[in-house]
Amino acid sequence: MCMPEKLKQDHFKVAVKKQEGLTYLTGRGAQFNTSNRFLKNETTKEHIEGIDDWEESNVPTLYIEQESKTIVNKVESPDVGMSYSMNPYAGCEHGCIYCYARNVHEYWGYSAGLDFERKIVVKKNAPELLRKFLMNKKWDATPIMLSGNTDCYQPAEQKYRLTRGLLEVCNEFNQPVGILTKNSWILKDKDVLQEMAKKRIVSAMVSITSLNEDLRRVMEPRTTTAQQKLKVINELSSAGVRMGIMMGPMIPGLNEHEIQRIMKEARDNGATFTAYTFIRLNGAIKLLFHDWLYKNFPDRADKVWHMVEQSHNGKVNDSRWGVRMRGEGSIAQLVAQQYKKYGKLYGMNAEEWSLNRKLFRRPGEQGKLF
Image (cartoon, rainbow, N blue to C red; front, top):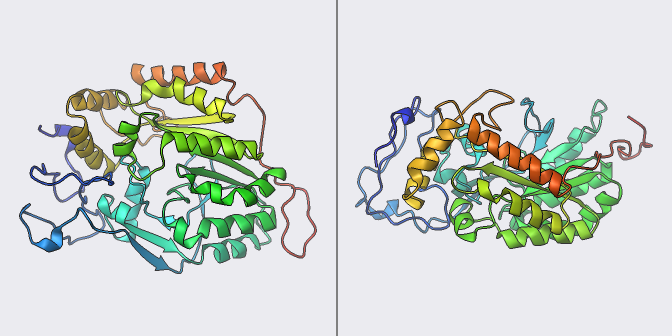
C-alpha cells in the first residue's frame, strides 16, 4: 500500500520502506528504527539480504547505566494532569507502538523505533537524586508523578529496583506521589504502597487500553495481560491503595468500543477513578504506527488511519494544548460522550480526593502544614 501524501517526513531523512521478506519481530512494537532528527549521520540497512550483523529478531535489550544529574522534572504542559514527574528509566521495553515517549529517546541520541525498546537508559542514582531534591528548603511537597514519561515498572525494574528506592524515599519524607503503570511488578511493592496509602500520600493508575489479548499482544507486546492488570487493581485496592485506570490511547476502529467494558471490569475490581486520551501520532510515532497498522490490520488499516486524520483536522497529530489529547470532530466527540456516560454509570470520579501534602517533613524536622 502506498503511504499517504500527508506522511511526508518533514525533518526525517529517509522514508519508511516496505519490509517484504523480513520476519515480523514478535515481542516488539516497532519493526524498524526511524531516523533521529538530531543526528547528521546514520546507519541504514539498504537490502534485506544484508550481512548477519544486521539480524534483528533476537537482539537482546541493552541496559545503559548512568549517573544522572536530576530526577524530578517540571511538566510545562497544562493538559497532562501533573506538575512534576520522575522517570528512573529512559526508553521502555514494553514496546507500546503508540507511546508518546518514543520521541524523547531521540534526545538521548537513539531512535524512537526499535532503539526505544532495546536501549534502556538506567538512572542508577535516582533515589539519591530524589533525596537531595526533597531536602531543598524551597520544596513544598507538590505531588510528583512516577512514570510521567516511561513506565517505572518496566522489566528493568526487576533487576535495578529503582522505583522501589524512589518510593522508600517518598515514604520517608511523606512526599505525595502518583503512579502510572501497565506492569504487574508493582505488586512487589505492595508493602510500602500500603504504608503510604494509610497516610494518603500515594495514588496509582493502571493503564488498560484493551481487554482483547490479540490486540494487546501486538500493540503493547511486553506489557502484562489485561487480566493481570485487573488483578493488580483488585489486590492493591483491597490493600487500601486508591486505584484508577488510564484508558489511553483510544484508537477509533481498534479499541474505542471497549470503553464500557474496561470501565465496568475496573470498577468491579476496585478502581474508583479514570482518565483517557485520544490517539495522536506526533513526530516519529506517525511513521512507526502507520507501518505497524498496515502490517497487523491490513483489512481495516485505511479506515483506522482516516478516522485518526478526521479527528485531528486532517492530520494525525495536533500540538494544541487542550485539544491534542482529546481530538476533535464527531469521532472524538463520540469517544468523549461514551467516557462521560459510562463513567457516571459506574460511579467513577465521584469522590473528592487529593494527595495529602500536610505530612511532608525532612529528616530531623517537625512536620508542618502547607
